[in-house]
Length: 191
Image (tube, rainbow, N blue to C red; front, side, top):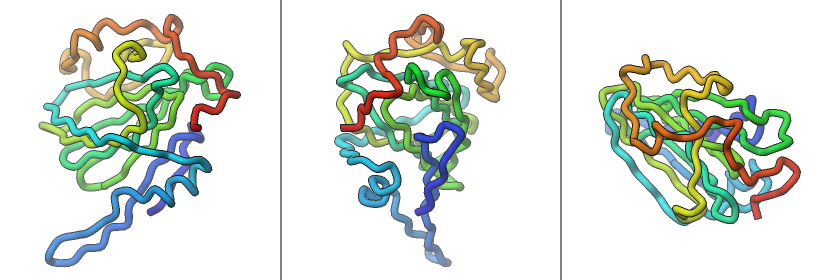
């Protein structure tokens, strides 16, 4: 596995090694020892999730407040998405900045998104099968979000607004300046 640091230094793109021949391919999709060596702390994923969405479905930008913050390891099994991570750690030099990574069933890239980042994605292909691991359970009382169309974040979702399909929840998320994040850059939420 190759770990590629991003402009948001705590977010990693992981490029698995693909071993293939005329019969198909094999790859390791997760190695806890390698991930922990790269990030420098213990990561205990406790749940795997999967979603299937049609073109234009936008999910996000979501996060959970401590102590139910979630790190995620995300990937696309089939299809194509634009994956977004936003730094919401108050005091971080990259606070309010985001990265956008194209994940596809073909490129096999994964993104590790630690605590202190909001996450979202939009489906660019006819449909996408999206899989992710989380290190904490869902807690409705700690669930938060940010408006996907907040101009202050300047996220280009690559599709016209009229083509986006959103849940009622995601249509009504607050602007970034109004969100409660619960994360401070100088505090370690990884333990």
